[in-house]
Length: 299
Ligand SMILES: NC(=O)c1ccc[n+]([C@@H]2O[C@H](COP(=O)([O-])OP(=O)(O)OC[C@H]3O[C@@H](n4cnc5c(N)ncnc54)[C@H](OP(=O)(O)O)[C@@H]3O)[C@@H](O)[C@H]2O)c1
Image (cartoon, rainbow, N blue to C red; front, side):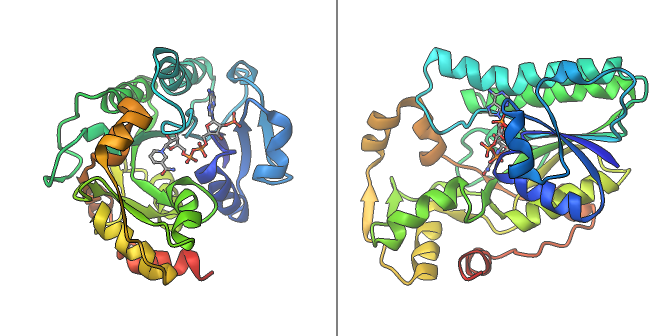
């Protein structure tokens, strides 16, 4: 298959490209920095600098849409919120316009979303039928999903990737936590009761591949392991995996004053279960956090 990937240069995208290339697929990656694509994604990967380069007579059999400004990196000023919005919703709308223009439509669009779709839900167990939340991150996900679903009008199968915290030692949440935890400075966040719905990157990529192949798959999928943990549980598991203590607590008030509104990403959470992936027959590789950390950290 010739597959177009947005966000292919990112943490998930690079791993995905590696696996798809090994399976013999032809890949084109959209990037604001097309010159970096061969080094990040593979020498044989084509780079696309803008979606307008997608000519109507060019065929992609599948599109995987992962692009988005990092959500936790900067304070959510009005300008930052707009950038988060444009890089997901406007980009997805543009993608659907190119799909509409294509003479041969892709068979499938796998499009990003996040478990933040559900908002802050305390201890409630959430499958894909749960309602969306009301905060900024939830509305961002809801509108991102709506924009992707517009591709269904053109006969495209659309799967929505409600992504949990993707664990990789190359970056993301775990990548950032490693240094302080290795230094024995690991800390619980606030009261530590907030749920963290995590997933090993190998499972995430394997789930994407199964959604790509399964012609019956469509709609939302919680892309998480079946055993979410609380922040206190995650802190303890990471400290144990690194054989270091994690004696500290970062008070919620401190995080809120440093980070503003986006502190909700760290202090609130969702207990999400991958019901639709399980119903589709996906067999998880790493169900248990200790096993996932062991695999990632001892590789
Ligand atoms: N990793 C996680 O734990 C996690 C959890 C939930 C949801 N997600 C979502 O899943 C997607 C992929 O995650 P990731 O961790 O791989 O992200 P990442 O490493 O931050 O990469 C994001 C990609 O998006 C592209 N991008 C960033 N800003 C952009 C902009 N303004 N316009 C166009 N493209 C832009 C970048 O490509 P170029 O720089 O090459 O243009 C980059 O490769 C993201 O949308 C993220 O929100 C991730």
